[in-house]
Image (tube, rainbow, N blue to C red; front, side):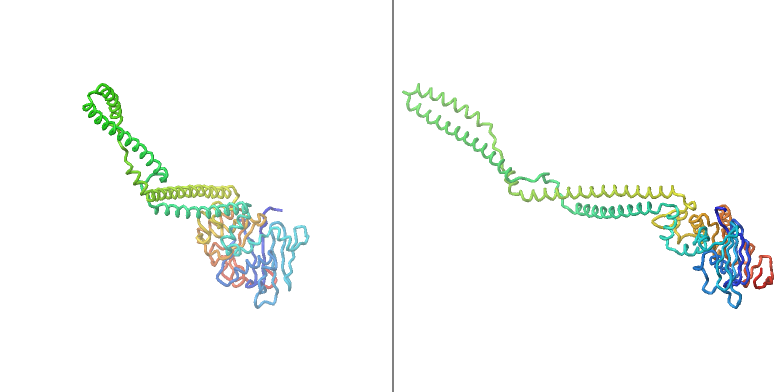
Length: 429
Protein backbone atom coordinates (compact mmCIF):
# COMPACT_ATOMS: atom_id res chain seq x y z
CA UNK A 1 0.00 0.00 0.00
CA UNK A 2 1.38 3.41 -0.96
CA UNK A 3 1.98 5.88 1.83
CA UNK A 4 -0.11 8.60 0.15
CA UNK A 5 -3.63 7.64 -0.94
CA UNK A 6 -5.11 9.35 -4.01
CA UNK A 7 -8.06 9.03 -6.35
CA UNK A 8 -7.48 7.08 -9.56
CA UNK A 9 -10.97 7.31 -11.00
CA UNK A 10 -14.40 8.57 -10.06
CA UNK A 11 -17.83 8.11 -11.62
CA UNK A 12 -20.87 10.11 -10.50
CA UNK A 13 -24.53 9.87 -11.54
CA UNK A 14 -27.61 11.78 -10.46
CA UNK A 15 -26.04 13.69 -7.56
CA UNK A 16 -27.29 17.28 -7.13
CA UNK A 17 -26.76 18.88 -10.60
CA UNK A 18 -24.70 15.99 -11.97
CA UNK A 19 -26.25 13.73 -14.61
CA UNK A 20 -23.15 11.75 -15.56
CA UNK A 21 -19.51 12.56 -14.89
CA UNK A 22 -16.45 10.38 -15.19
CA UNK A 23 -13.01 11.72 -14.24
CA UNK A 24 -9.55 10.20 -14.00
CA UNK A 25 -7.61 12.84 -12.03
CA UNK A 26 -3.91 13.34 -12.57
CA UNK A 27 -1.94 11.67 -9.77
CA UNK A 28 0.13 14.76 -8.94
CA UNK A 29 -0.88 18.35 -9.53
CA UNK A 30 -4.14 20.00 -10.55
CA UNK A 31 -7.19 18.43 -12.08
CA UNK A 32 -9.47 21.36 -12.91
CA UNK A 33 -13.19 20.83 -13.32
CA UNK A 34 -14.32 23.80 -15.39
CA UNK A 35 -17.59 25.17 -16.67
CA UNK A 36 -19.99 28.03 -16.29
CA UNK A 37 -22.02 28.73 -13.18
CA UNK A 38 -24.76 26.26 -12.11
CA UNK A 39 -23.54 23.49 -14.41
CA UNK A 40 -22.53 21.01 -11.70
CA UNK A 41 -18.87 21.75 -10.92
CA UNK A 42 -19.30 22.03 -7.15
CA UNK A 43 -21.54 18.97 -7.24
CA UNK A 44 -18.46 16.95 -8.26
CA UNK A 45 -16.60 17.99 -5.10
CA UNK A 46 -19.67 17.44 -2.91
CA UNK A 47 -20.02 13.94 -4.35
CA UNK A 48 -16.42 13.04 -3.53
CA UNK A 49 -16.80 14.42 0.00
CA UNK A 50 -19.96 12.37 0.50
CA UNK A 51 -18.42 9.20 -0.90
CA UNK A 52 -15.25 9.35 1.19
CA UNK A 53 -16.22 11.46 4.23
CA UNK A 54 -19.42 9.74 5.25
CA UNK A 55 -23.04 10.68 5.69
CA UNK A 56 -22.16 13.92 7.47
CA UNK A 57 -21.29 15.25 3.99
CA UNK A 58 -24.43 13.94 2.31
CA UNK A 59 -26.18 16.82 0.49
CA UNK A 60 -29.63 17.68 1.84
CA UNK A 61 -31.02 17.02 -1.65
CA UNK A 62 -28.60 14.41 -2.89
CA UNK A 63 -30.67 13.04 -5.77
CA UNK A 64 -30.71 15.13 -8.92
CA UNK A 65 -33.92 17.04 -9.33
CA UNK A 66 -36.12 15.43 -11.95
CA UNK A 67 -34.35 12.07 -11.82
CA UNK A 68 -36.09 8.88 -10.79
CA UNK A 69 -32.81 7.00 -10.56
CA UNK A 70 -31.04 7.22 -7.17
CA UNK A 71 -27.52 8.63 -6.87
CA UNK A 72 -24.58 6.44 -7.84
CA UNK A 73 -21.00 7.05 -6.72
CA UNK A 74 -18.03 4.94 -7.70
CA UNK A 75 -14.47 5.87 -6.70
CA UNK A 76 -11.31 3.82 -7.22
CA UNK A 77 -8.32 4.76 -5.02
CA UNK A 78 -4.68 4.18 -5.97
CA UNK A 79 -4.32 1.60 -3.17
CA UNK A 80 -6.94 -0.61 -4.78
CA UNK A 81 -9.86 0.37 -2.57
CA UNK A 82 -13.18 0.73 -4.37
CA UNK A 83 -15.72 3.04 -2.72
CA UNK A 84 -19.35 2.88 -3.85
CA UNK A 85 -22.65 4.44 -2.87
CA UNK A 86 -25.76 3.41 -4.73
CA UNK A 87 -29.30 2.24 -4.33
CA UNK A 88 -32.27 3.86 -2.70
CA UNK A 89 -30.44 4.45 0.58
CA UNK A 90 -27.06 5.22 -1.05
CA UNK A 91 -25.47 2.58 1.18
CA UNK A 92 -21.67 2.66 1.48
CA UNK A 93 -19.64 -0.24 0.16
CA UNK A 94 -15.84 -0.37 0.49
CA UNK A 95 -13.90 -3.21 -1.14
CA UNK A 96 -10.10 -3.67 -1.08
CA UNK A 97 -7.93 -5.17 -3.80
CA UNK A 98 -8.40 -8.65 -2.31
CA UNK A 99 -12.16 -8.37 -2.42
CA UNK A 100 -12.47 -7.93 1.34
CA UNK A 101 -15.15 -5.51 2.46
CA UNK A 102 -14.85 -2.61 4.86
CA UNK A 103 -16.70 0.53 5.90
CA UNK A 104 -16.29 4.18 6.83
CA UNK A 105 -13.73 3.36 9.52
CA UNK A 106 -11.36 2.05 6.86
CA UNK A 107 -11.73 5.27 4.86
CA UNK A 108 -11.16 7.43 7.93
CA UNK A 109 -7.62 6.07 8.25
CA UNK A 110 -6.43 8.00 5.22
CA UNK A 111 -9.16 10.59 4.53
CA UNK A 112 -8.33 13.87 6.24
CA UNK A 113 -11.59 15.69 6.98
CA UNK A 114 -10.17 19.07 6.01
CA UNK A 115 -9.11 17.65 2.64
CA UNK A 116 -12.76 17.23 1.69
CA UNK A 117 -14.00 20.24 3.66
CA UNK A 118 -11.30 22.86 3.09
CA UNK A 119 -13.69 25.82 3.64
CA UNK A 120 -13.98 24.69 7.27
CA UNK A 121 -10.30 25.48 7.73
CA UNK A 122 -10.22 28.60 5.54
CA UNK A 123 -13.23 30.13 7.32
CA UNK A 124 -11.86 29.40 10.79
CA UNK A 125 -10.55 32.28 12.89
CA UNK A 126 -6.89 33.23 12.77
CA UNK A 127 -6.39 31.76 16.23
CA UNK A 128 -8.00 28.45 15.22
CA UNK A 129 -5.82 28.21 12.12
CA UNK A 130 -2.72 28.87 14.21
CA UNK A 131 -3.72 26.20 16.74
CA UNK A 132 -4.18 23.69 13.92
CA UNK A 133 -0.69 24.43 12.62
CA UNK A 134 0.87 24.24 16.09
CA UNK A 135 -0.90 20.94 16.66
CA UNK A 136 0.68 19.62 13.47
CA UNK A 137 4.25 20.63 14.30
CA UNK A 138 3.92 19.62 17.95
CA UNK A 139 4.96 22.88 19.63
CA UNK A 140 1.55 24.20 20.65
CA UNK A 141 1.99 23.73 24.41
CA UNK A 142 5.53 25.12 24.42
CA UNK A 143 4.57 28.17 22.37
CA UNK A 144 1.49 28.79 24.52
CA UNK A 145 3.70 28.74 27.63
CA UNK A 146 6.15 31.19 26.04
CA UNK A 147 3.35 33.49 24.91
CA UNK A 148 1.82 33.39 28.40
CA UNK A 149 5.22 34.23 29.91
CA UNK A 150 5.71 37.04 27.38
CA UNK A 151 2.28 38.51 28.21
CA UNK A 152 2.97 38.33 31.96
CA UNK A 153 6.34 40.05 31.49
CA UNK A 154 4.74 42.65 29.23
CA UNK A 155 2.03 43.43 31.78
CA UNK A 156 4.64 43.59 34.56
CA UNK A 157 6.83 45.90 32.48
CA UNK A 158 3.84 48.09 31.64
CA UNK A 159 3.07 48.53 35.35
CA UNK A 160 6.73 49.22 36.18
CA UNK A 161 6.92 51.74 33.33
CA UNK A 162 3.84 53.57 34.61
CA UNK A 163 5.25 53.70 38.15
CA UNK A 164 8.64 54.88 36.81
CA UNK A 165 6.94 57.72 34.90
CA UNK A 166 4.94 58.70 37.99
CA UNK A 167 8.08 58.66 40.18
CA UNK A 168 10.03 60.76 37.66
CA UNK A 169 7.17 63.23 37.33
CA UNK A 170 6.91 63.46 41.12
CA UNK A 171 10.70 64.00 41.42
CA UNK A 172 10.65 66.73 38.76
CA UNK A 173 7.87 68.56 40.61
CA UNK A 174 9.81 68.67 43.92
CA UNK A 175 11.45 71.99 44.90
CA UNK A 176 15.23 71.87 45.37
CA UNK A 177 17.34 74.33 47.42
CA UNK A 178 20.98 74.22 46.29
CA UNK A 179 22.11 76.48 49.20
CA UNK A 180 20.67 74.19 51.88
CA UNK A 181 23.00 71.79 53.79
CA UNK A 182 22.90 68.08 53.02
CA UNK A 183 21.85 67.01 56.52
CA UNK A 184 19.14 68.26 58.88
CA UNK A 185 20.29 70.92 61.33
CA UNK A 186 20.12 70.06 65.07
CA UNK A 187 19.00 72.90 67.39
CA UNK A 188 20.69 71.19 70.37
CA UNK A 189 24.01 71.09 68.57
CA UNK A 190 23.79 74.76 67.60
CA UNK A 191 22.93 75.76 71.18
CA UNK A 192 25.85 73.68 72.46
CA UNK A 193 28.20 75.43 70.04
CA UNK A 194 26.78 78.79 71.15
CA UNK A 195 27.35 77.93 74.83
CA UNK A 196 30.94 76.93 74.16
CA UNK A 197 31.60 80.25 72.42
CA UNK A 198 29.91 82.16 75.23
CA UNK A 199 32.08 80.29 77.76
CA UNK A 200 35.24 81.24 75.87
CA UNK A 201 34.05 84.82 75.58
CA UNK A 202 33.29 84.83 79.34
CA UNK A 203 36.80 83.64 80.15
CA UNK A 204 38.18 86.36 77.88
CA UNK A 205 36.11 88.94 79.70
CA UNK A 206 37.34 87.67 83.03
CA UNK A 207 40.90 88.08 81.86
CA UNK A 208 40.21 91.59 80.61
CA UNK A 209 38.60 92.54 83.94
CA UNK A 210 41.57 91.09 85.80
CA UNK A 211 43.92 93.16 83.67
CA UNK A 212 41.83 96.27 84.29
CA UNK A 213 41.84 95.61 88.02
CA UNK A 214 45.58 95.13 88.14
CA UNK A 215 45.98 98.27 86.15
CA UNK A 216 43.94 100.19 88.71
CA UNK A 217 45.99 98.63 91.46
CA UNK A 218 49.16 99.85 89.83
CA UNK A 219 47.76 103.37 89.81
CA UNK A 220 46.74 103.21 93.44
CA UNK A 221 50.03 101.74 94.48
CA UNK A 222 51.93 104.33 92.46
CA UNK A 223 50.03 107.04 94.32
CA UNK A 224 50.76 105.39 97.62
CA UNK A 225 54.47 105.30 96.67
CA UNK A 226 54.36 109.03 96.05
CA UNK A 227 52.57 109.61 99.34
CA UNK A 228 54.50 107.13 101.37
CA UNK A 229 58.09 107.60 100.46
CA UNK A 230 58.96 106.13 103.72
CA UNK A 231 57.55 102.90 102.58
CA UNK A 232 59.19 103.32 99.16
CA UNK A 233 61.48 100.35 99.32
CA UNK A 234 58.75 97.96 100.27
CA UNK A 235 56.23 99.47 97.90
CA UNK A 236 58.77 99.55 95.06
CA UNK A 237 59.30 95.83 95.51
CA UNK A 238 55.55 95.37 95.54
CA UNK A 239 55.32 97.60 92.50
CA UNK A 240 57.84 95.53 90.60
CA UNK A 241 55.94 92.34 91.36
CA UNK A 242 52.62 93.89 90.47
CA UNK A 243 54.10 95.37 87.28
CA UNK A 244 55.34 91.95 86.30
CA UNK A 245 51.88 90.46 86.82
CA UNK A 246 50.41 93.30 84.79
CA UNK A 247 52.78 92.62 81.91
CA UNK A 248 51.79 88.95 81.91
CA UNK A 249 48.09 89.76 81.99
CA UNK A 250 48.40 92.35 79.23
CA UNK A 251 50.26 89.88 77.02
CA UNK A 252 47.51 87.28 77.52
CA UNK A 253 44.72 89.70 76.75
CA UNK A 254 46.12 91.79 73.91
CA UNK A 255 45.64 89.16 71.08
CA UNK A 256 42.31 87.76 72.18
CA UNK A 257 39.45 87.88 69.57
CA UNK A 258 35.84 87.39 70.55
CA UNK A 259 33.87 84.95 68.30
CA UNK A 260 30.53 86.05 66.85
CA UNK A 261 27.41 84.06 67.64
CA UNK A 262 25.38 85.93 65.04
CA UNK A 263 25.51 83.07 62.48
CA UNK A 264 24.50 80.50 65.08
CA UNK A 265 21.78 82.78 66.38
CA UNK A 266 20.50 83.15 62.79
CA UNK A 267 20.69 79.39 62.28
CA UNK A 268 18.76 78.82 65.50
CA UNK A 269 16.18 81.35 64.42
CA UNK A 270 15.89 79.86 60.88
CA UNK A 271 16.34 76.19 61.81
CA UNK A 272 12.83 75.16 60.73
CA UNK A 273 13.18 76.89 57.36
CA UNK A 274 16.61 75.31 56.81
CA UNK A 275 15.37 71.89 57.77
CA UNK A 276 12.35 72.31 55.48
CA UNK A 277 14.71 72.88 52.57
CA UNK A 278 16.90 69.93 53.59
CA UNK A 279 13.89 67.64 53.77
CA UNK A 280 12.71 68.88 50.37
CA UNK A 281 16.12 68.11 48.88
CA UNK A 282 16.14 64.66 50.50
CA UNK A 283 12.65 63.96 49.12
CA UNK A 284 13.73 64.97 45.63
CA UNK A 285 16.85 62.79 45.82
CA UNK A 286 14.73 59.83 46.99
CA UNK A 287 12.18 60.40 44.21
CA UNK A 288 14.93 60.45 41.59
CA UNK A 289 16.44 57.26 43.04
CA UNK A 290 13.01 55.57 42.89
CA UNK A 291 12.49 56.71 39.31
CA UNK A 292 15.92 55.36 38.29
CA UNK A 293 15.24 52.04 40.05
CA UNK A 294 11.95 51.53 38.17
CA UNK A 295 13.61 52.58 34.94
CA UNK A 296 16.23 49.88 35.48
CA UNK A 297 13.50 47.32 36.28
CA UNK A 298 11.74 48.31 33.04
CA UNK A 299 14.94 47.75 31.06
CA UNK A 300 15.44 44.35 32.73
CA UNK A 301 11.89 43.26 31.85
CA UNK A 302 12.40 44.46 28.27
CA UNK A 303 15.43 42.17 28.06
CA UNK A 304 13.40 39.23 29.37
CA UNK A 305 10.61 39.92 26.87
CA UNK A 306 13.14 40.02 24.02
CA UNK A 307 14.61 36.71 25.23
CA UNK A 308 11.15 35.13 25.38
CA UNK A 309 10.31 36.33 21.88
CA UNK A 310 13.65 34.98 20.65
CA UNK A 311 12.86 31.60 22.24
CA UNK A 312 9.49 31.59 20.40
CA UNK A 313 11.20 32.33 17.09
CA UNK A 314 13.84 29.64 17.69
CA UNK A 315 11.12 27.14 18.66
CA UNK A 316 9.21 27.74 15.42
CA UNK A 317 12.41 27.77 13.35
CA UNK A 318 13.41 24.38 14.74
CA UNK A 319 9.95 22.91 14.06
CA UNK A 320 9.18 21.12 10.82
CA UNK A 321 6.68 23.52 9.26
CA UNK A 322 4.52 22.35 6.35
CA UNK A 323 5.51 25.30 4.16
CA UNK A 324 8.63 27.53 4.01
CA UNK A 325 7.81 31.04 5.15
CA UNK A 326 4.86 29.88 7.26
CA UNK A 327 4.89 30.67 10.97
CA UNK A 328 2.77 31.73 13.93
CA UNK A 329 3.03 35.25 15.35
CA UNK A 330 0.89 36.56 18.22
CA UNK A 331 -1.34 33.50 17.93
CA UNK A 332 -2.06 33.91 14.20
CA UNK A 333 -0.82 32.30 10.98
CA UNK A 334 1.74 34.42 9.15
CA UNK A 335 3.05 33.61 5.65
CA UNK A 336 6.00 35.57 4.26
CA UNK A 337 5.26 38.36 6.75
CA UNK A 338 1.53 38.63 5.98
CA UNK A 339 -1.42 37.65 8.20
CA UNK A 340 -4.34 35.70 6.76
CA UNK A 341 -6.51 38.73 5.95
CA UNK A 342 -3.65 40.27 3.93
CA UNK A 343 -2.79 37.09 1.98
CA UNK A 344 -3.83 36.52 -1.59
CA UNK A 345 -6.45 33.87 -2.33
CA UNK A 346 -3.73 31.77 -3.97
CA UNK A 347 -1.54 31.88 -0.87
CA UNK A 348 -4.49 30.93 1.33
CA UNK A 349 -5.19 27.86 -0.81
CA UNK A 350 -1.52 26.93 -0.84
CA UNK A 351 -1.23 27.21 2.94
CA UNK A 352 -4.46 25.33 3.56
CA UNK A 353 -3.39 22.53 1.22
CA UNK A 354 0.02 22.23 2.89
CA UNK A 355 -1.54 22.07 6.36
CA UNK A 356 -4.06 19.45 5.29
CA UNK A 357 -1.22 17.36 3.88
CA UNK A 358 0.70 17.67 7.12
CA UNK A 359 -2.32 16.76 9.26
CA UNK A 360 -2.59 13.35 7.60
CA UNK A 361 0.33 12.41 5.32
CA UNK A 362 -1.62 9.35 4.17
CA UNK A 363 -4.17 11.62 2.51
CA UNK A 364 -2.66 12.52 -0.85
CA UNK A 365 -5.54 14.54 -2.26
CA UNK A 366 -7.48 17.71 -1.52
CA UNK A 367 -10.68 19.25 -2.91
CA UNK A 368 -10.58 22.94 -3.88
CA UNK A 369 -13.56 25.08 -4.90
CA UNK A 370 -13.66 28.37 -6.82
CA UNK A 371 -10.13 28.39 -8.23
CA UNK A 372 -11.12 31.26 -10.55
CA UNK A 373 -9.54 33.58 -7.98
CA UNK A 374 -6.14 32.58 -9.42
CA UNK A 375 -4.83 34.13 -12.62
CA UNK A 376 -3.23 31.84 -15.17
CA UNK A 377 0.36 32.41 -13.98
CA UNK A 378 -0.55 31.78 -10.35
CA UNK A 379 -2.58 28.75 -11.35
CA UNK A 380 0.41 27.36 -13.23
CA UNK A 381 2.75 27.98 -10.29
CA UNK A 382 0.27 26.38 -7.89
CA UNK A 383 0.07 23.30 -10.13
CA UNK A 384 3.86 23.00 -10.23
CA UNK A 385 4.02 23.27 -6.43
CA UNK A 386 1.41 20.51 -6.06
CA UNK A 387 3.42 18.26 -8.39
CA UNK A 388 6.61 18.92 -6.41
CA UNK A 389 4.78 18.06 -3.20
CA UNK A 390 3.29 14.91 -4.70
CA UNK A 391 -0.22 16.20 -4.00
CA UNK A 392 -3.36 15.58 -5.99
CA UNK A 393 -5.85 18.47 -6.13
CA UNK A 394 -9.30 18.26 -7.71
CA UNK A 395 -10.54 21.81 -8.13
CA UNK A 396 -13.38 23.77 -9.71
CA UNK A 397 -13.01 26.91 -11.78
CA UNK A 398 -15.52 29.09 -13.57
CA UNK A 399 -13.90 28.70 -16.97
CA UNK A 400 -14.10 26.72 -20.19
CA UNK A 401 -10.49 27.38 -21.13
CA UNK A 402 -7.65 25.02 -21.95
CA UNK A 403 -6.49 24.95 -18.34
CA UNK A 404 -9.53 22.81 -17.49
CA UNK A 405 -9.04 19.04 -17.40
CA UNK A 406 -12.74 18.51 -17.86
CA UNK A 407 -15.73 20.77 -18.43
CA UNK A 408 -19.15 20.28 -16.83
CA UNK A 409 -22.06 21.39 -18.94
CA UNK A 410 -25.63 20.86 -17.79
CA UNK A 411 -24.54 18.00 -15.54
CA UNK A 412 -22.42 16.19 -18.15
CA UNK A 413 -18.66 15.80 -18.34
CA UNK A 414 -17.12 17.10 -21.58
CA UNK A 415 -13.50 17.35 -22.60
CA UNK A 416 -12.40 20.91 -23.49
CA UNK A 417 -12.28 19.95 -27.19
CA UNK A 418 -15.86 18.73 -27.35
CA UNK A 419 -18.30 21.22 -28.80
CA UNK A 420 -21.44 19.17 -28.46
CA UNK A 421 -22.90 17.42 -25.44
CA UNK A 422 -22.21 13.68 -25.33
CA UNK A 423 -25.23 11.33 -25.37
CA UNK A 424 -25.88 9.86 -21.94
CA UNK A 425 -27.88 6.87 -20.88
CA UNK A 426 -28.94 6.43 -17.28
CA UNK A 427 -26.83 3.89 -15.42
CA UNK A 428 -23.90 3.91 -17.85
CA UNK A 429 -20.91 6.05 -18.79
